Amino acid sequence: MSADGPSNFIRDIILDDLQSNKFGGRVQTRFPPEPNGYLHIGHAKSICLNFGLAAEFGGKTNLRFDDTNPEKEETEYVDSIMETVKWLGFDWEDRLFYASDYFGQLYEWAVQLIRKEKAYVCDLTADQVRQYRGTLTEPGRESPYRHRSVEENTDLFARMRTGEFPDGSRTLRAKIDMASPNLNLRDPVMYRIVHAEHHRTGAQWCIYPMYDFAHGQSDSVERITHSICTLEFEDHRPLYDWYLEQLGIYHPQQIEFDRLNLTYTLLSKRKLLTLVEQGRVSGWDDPRMPTLAGIKRRGYTPEAIRNFCNAIGVSKTNGTIELALLEHHVREDLNKRAPRSMAVLRPLRVVIDNYPERQVEEMEAVNNPEDAAAGTRQVPFSRVLYIEQDDFREDPPKQYYRLSPGREVRLRYAYFVTCTGVVKDEKTGEVREIHCTYDPATRGGNAPDGRKVKSTIHWVSAAHAVDAEVRLYDNLFLKENPNETAEGEDFTANLNPQSLEVLPQAKLEPSLAGAPVGSRHQFERMGYFCVDPDSAAGRLVFNRTAGLRDTWARIEKREKGKA
RNA sequence: UGGGACGUCGUCUAACGGUAAGACUGCAGACUCUGGAUCUGCGUAUCGGGGUUCGAAUCCCUGCGUCCCAGCCA
Image 1 (cartoon, rainbow, N blue to C red):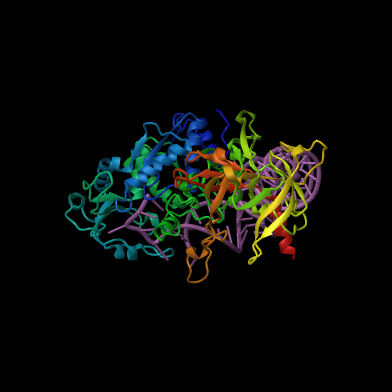
Image 2 (tube, chains in turn yellow, orange; image 1 turned 30 degrees about the vertical axis):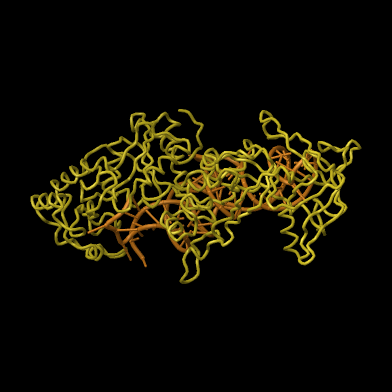
């Protein structure tokens, strides 16, 4: 058997099963989202696992929507989920299924269990069911309806189906064991009455199967071999097995793994929904969101996400991955593929006093030092430029190598310049513009006399600059664990008020003018940026995907900490 | 307090009775027309206590800690 996928305990189980021929040499998995929200990075882990494992062993993976709750599920979510799985790079081919495809079969199976006296119609209210269930430490009590006859149950269940009874008035329950220490086995509900429009079956049904009565059988119908799910379903496995055994049908193996947790990030559909509904973010695809739609808009590549998912591994340990690892993988990927350009995010005007007024020179710049095939481009240089405000200090601190009065630096791909003067706002004292002289002998960026400069900074010619809006993102939450809150507060108290910073006056080199939406770029020395769909003709909007590793910022922070 | 599961560097993962390894992070250095990238080096871990064994992260017992379960959600 091939062995190139990342090793993990599930893969080992599959290897064993292949060895023992448990499933006749087949590997068939499925990704089973409920269409009640957008997919997030945690789902990516499951998608990569399910599709990755099957692909490794020549198996197939189904996409199956777990749509057994008509009240929460919508077509909008179905569409976005399919789009996202495709974007991530996976293909379910013709194997698109819905749990609702099996409603008829599931109903037949329920009738079968009634006939076996393994299921009964219960008239207890939701409240009563809860009381009868007992607690973690006390056994439950049997429902007074538990011993109805097969005939009565069959009749009642049929009438539940035809819509004779109101919502919540009755349920179909499995007859298992009210004293089981596993609460899932205390006569779990199989069917409930819900008169609601289903996104696919419309008003055809008014009774809907519970997850437990639908999932295993759906796996069975689809001949799934390894049904991979998260840890919280561990307690459900006995029930999963029980239904399949009672029904005497094909029995897949459920295997549980640890759900992804990320620092500074919330991965709960409910809480993400809250952020969207309360307007804390601009939508499901806000670039600060951990949804795959948001991450995509932020500029992440599918490759980076897949690499991340492979790197984090799979186990049963409840852990939390550091966000830094995710960021590492985008940088690693984008470093190889993102074309470089120069963009000034916070512009500071620079006049090169000894440079001819109307002269413009085209400077040759490398598109990607990591990829020779990316070639070069021309960047216009002229007398008035913009540089980054951060690249000039009137009083340079220790270890600051950039421009300051009297100091010479290199303008990337252009000339050495020396700062000769500073113009300040008379009232505020703010630096308005600076003056420099250039050394014509250093054209292209090298001095014939071999002298060195400590620093190279980026620039944009003022007359040729393209205006753009740049959106910088920081963690959505201030705390590593956003769920850790003081008494009476909820996770929204941990929201980072500075998670979005908009820079409306960025200046880009002209080659960026026609950058298409979604294109990814490295702005040299600044980070990776992606063109946002909010861009309009003549008005580009960029999202910062990730910053570059910033040694100076680190030094500065450390020095400030000392002071 | 019933049941289920899990405890290995700061974080995540490996080691399947035989030298505790890798990645990320951090720190130091080299190189550099991006304080980027790259390269080199450094650091820190088997939850505690007993046992079995020539030998234990691994097997057994015990204690401790963490997570999940009392939806007619999934």
